[in-house]
Amino acid sequence: MGRYLMLLPLLFQFYSCATAQKVIEAKPEPQKEFVYYEDTELNQLRSELDDIFNNPSFSNAYWGVVIQSLETGEYFYRLNEHKSFIPASNMKLFTTAVALLKLGPDFKYRTNLYTDGEIKDGILYGNLFVRGTGDPTISGRFTNGDVIKTFKDWADSLIKLGIKEINGDIIGDDNYFDDQYMGTGWSWDDETYWYSAHISALSFNDNCVDLEIIPGKKIGEPALVKITPETKYVKINNFVTTVHPDSVTQIDFFRAPGTNVINVFGKISLRSKTYKESISVHNPTLYTVTVLKEVLESKGIKVNGNAVDIDDSQLNPDYETMKVLASYESPPLSEIIKVINKRSQNFYAEQVFRTLGKIFGGEGSTQKSVEVIKNTLSQIGIPPDAISIYDGSGLSRLNLVTPFQILTLLNYMYRHEYFSYFYESLPIAGVDGTLETRMRKTKAQGNVRAKTGYVQYARSLSGYVKTKDDEMLAFVMMTNNYLVPTSVANITQDIVCNRLANFSRRK
Image (cartoon, rainbow, N blue to C red):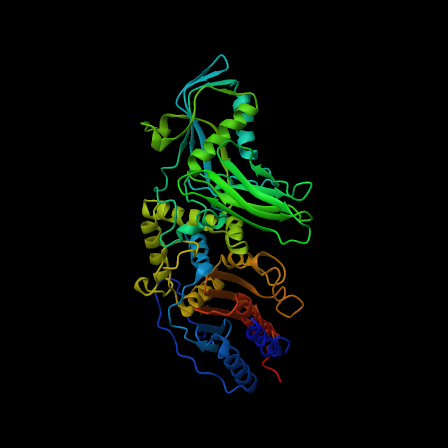
């Protein structure tokens, strides 16, 4: 670690210190070649960037970088811009941009509660169907933390209809998407954690349960584990012990695939604050209707049937002939993509990804979603056979994109009527999202809008920055195969962003 720390002084000395590729309106136009201006300040910038990206600490890795003025089209810097890289969560830029272009910022999901029966004397004689359409937002994220608010609202709607008892099952229908619940190329040993939550057309609470681990009252006592929502759908095995106040808290989790038994193990310091984590569940559809049934019963509605995944039934409902008893409408896509990009929320990204396949490809599958995205990208100058897409979030290590392809997307969106929605969805340096703690107290703070990306040995940062002259730049920085701490890659990217924010063509 010591030799890595020696890198920091070298990095920090920089820290304080076309026409653009034409946007395609209808048909692709030939790209124009640009030459660098004989600009002393720009040449100095390029020399500094050469020093930064040739740092020997990354000698076993490689960088892909491209920086361009969106006003003059001039390339400030280019390095391996046509080489393929694992983009990690920079893949979300493609997912959210295509979603805006195809669905529009005002698109909303709707989840309906149907029945195939009749209401008589306070009793619903029939089943209750919850038909999912891919909505990722049924949670506490938009309801002040009340994760079951939608279900309580549905219960209130049923009560207003006079329903006191249901003589039938609560059935979850997730057939809007296919049954591939993890992305292609995802790591099997990540399945326990929130960032690998299952994909499902019917989803609830990000398809996770939220755990709070609280130290016991004295050393040696078991920790207290609380779960939200309070449900019998999962079983918690608590193996966490309270340890000396000076000890380090170390907690981990494991949910065996195909089960909802969550093992919590490790140690928590007696003085530790509440430790919070979200853990994925198996079969989000059954999870959704199980919690809905529990909420209905808590509100005084007797349910005589069971919570059922439609795949475990012989039913084939005809929703055109069925009655809608209640519904939920999501926030608009413009708000959903903020969750995707600012928080780098994989589950939301995958839900939107599959939605594109379903609406524009006729099937909520990876294959159709990839086709829709590639077809859209081809219209803005990115050939389908030149990019590898396997999911919508970037969690897959099979994704391969070039820095220039990301730049092409950033360039196109900058000139599109929906740019403000795209721009506002990106993390702001030193302010929010995954950049909240980075670039603080520099010229980049509040200026840089960019998407981070990380999977092991791959780190990316791509977005927009304004120079000291208020000239808008698009930049892409990707590094793969590094063995230094990721913090060193972060510092390198932050230094470059700050240098660009301080750049002026004037001497």
